Image 1 (cartoon, one colour):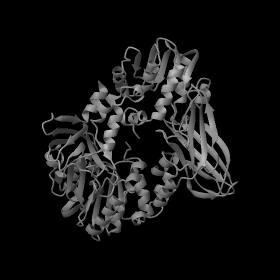
Image 2: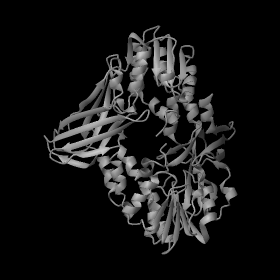
Image 3: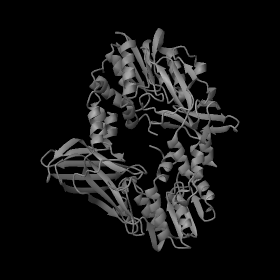
Amino acid sequence: MSSYAELPVHRWMLRDTERNEAYRRAMTHVVKPGDVVLDVGAGTGILSIFAAAAGARRVYAVERTAIANVARQVIEANGHSACIEVLQDDLENVTLPEKVDVIVSEWMGGFGVDENILAPLVMARDRWLRPGGKMVPGRVTAMLAPAYLPEFDDAMAYWMSRPHGVDLSLVARLTRQESFHTQTPPESLVAPPQAMWSHDPLTCSLEVADQSFTTRLTFEATQTATFSGLLAWFVAEMGDGTTLTNAVGEPDTHWGRTLFPLDGPIEVAAGTKIEIELRCDPSLPGSCEFGWTVKVADRPAEVHDTRRIRSGAGR
Amino acid sequence: MSSYAELPVHRWMLRDTERNEAYRRAMTHVVKPGDVVLDVGAGTGILSIFAAAAGARRVYAVERTAIANVARQVIEANGHSACIEVLQDDLENVTLPEKVDVIVSEWMGGFGVDENILAPLVMARDRWLRPGGKMVPGRVTAMLAPAYLPEFDDAMAYWMSRPHGVDLSLVARLTRQESFHTQTPPESLVAPPQAMWSHDPLTCSLEVADQSFTTRLTFEATQTATFSGLLAWFVAEMGDGTTLTNAVGEPDTHWGRTLFPLDGPIEVAAGTKIEIELRCDPSLPGSCEFGWTVKVADRPAEVHDTRRIRSGAGR
């Protein structure tokens, strides 16, 4: 995994024109001339530059990692050094000389809360956003749907096939406890997506932002189909009437969709009930652990947990 | 970058059937019944399993990272626990109870020496290989060729295009100081490849294995073409008369080819001289820093250095 301190991950985000254009439009709409803006997790500084270009009087770009040095140079090259101040520090250590009119942040993981940044964002809101101030994005909703993912099923079949005459079934067992980012799944949802949870960072309490996120949903297959995993994504309201999403069927973004695999593909008939419980627990800064339980009709429930990888590797 | 302690990078190598089959065949040919084998950097243990299956009496699988726990389980699942001993430690801390007949290791980076493992491998040879013992692979030769890489040129053009109205030329400048692994370059070499250096781990001195690796080569364009970067790869002799290679034009492996970019594409006519100096300096364990100088005909020389990324990010 690339660290946010390093250029490759930022190059990847900076090539995501869906993401960048959504933020550029939102800044143009939300930021009024003379506004003060706080950019939380500024990275290479592009959202701060959009805010400055939209007329902000002052932008505070807070970035914890050394990529802040790249941000300073990009901001200078764009002629915004006088307007944008880059603060390389943890958000909670930062002291601003004034309240802000707008907080902008690209804090979403594959399905919103899974990068564990909502709580610090809410704390920054309580400290620095003036009454009546705005946040971009606004409401972020996490979505889930059972789906058919033949590429993943093929990979699992490979690990079970005794390649080179070697039993590698352990690799399959460990892999089924991981979540994956998948850019190009077939767009064959087994049932319509449902919302898992939804947060408006402007009104969300710290208590809610800081908890584990759990959902229980029942899906009903809409046709006879192969169910091979759960796909999750988000829909973010950008404050200008548009949304930014990594939903299945929408243009690709750097997020892809998050896949929670099954033990193996399950054939389901139209009308089959699929009961899901999905849990997202904050763990390290920037990451979560996941657990998912899947019960199809009368079959026994499958229990998956990302913590099992480490315990599996550790025994 | 995934760490060698983590499953994803091993899953990637374990799906590389070119790599695995080459080692499996080599073990079948080189290991004689009753042999003692040392596997340096055993990872998930698959090369040790090949050695055991080929008739080894005893295999010592040395692996520094926690993936050793996965190796133990895979070895058990394959019925080789009595034969293969997994030693989780740095190679230099390991003490074996006997000399070995064969040392097997998958130590090659994108062009051989660039994962900085040749020197520890040579030290292990001097300590543990019995006189007359064998090493797999044997000779490894690093190759280089100027090539046309339109995908990379397109990416650079993107960073120079003021996307979203923002000057991101710094990203292009930093990117040109990096090396890249590229899986599917067009197979359009601008000039025939030449060898950079070649090492036989069985005879290589520690002094040679531990130095910086530098080459100076002159290429001559074979046709009018676009020269956009240098591609490097290796050819490894596996000890059974076959080779394992990630060369351009050969089947894909997990290594891809290593790309050293230019500042921008250069049109060259047939017969144009291209002078190269490429330097590979051991840095951290498992990695090197690179410098490359490219002079085309009478143009000024371009100087690239991976250290410039960090200094660029740090000023």
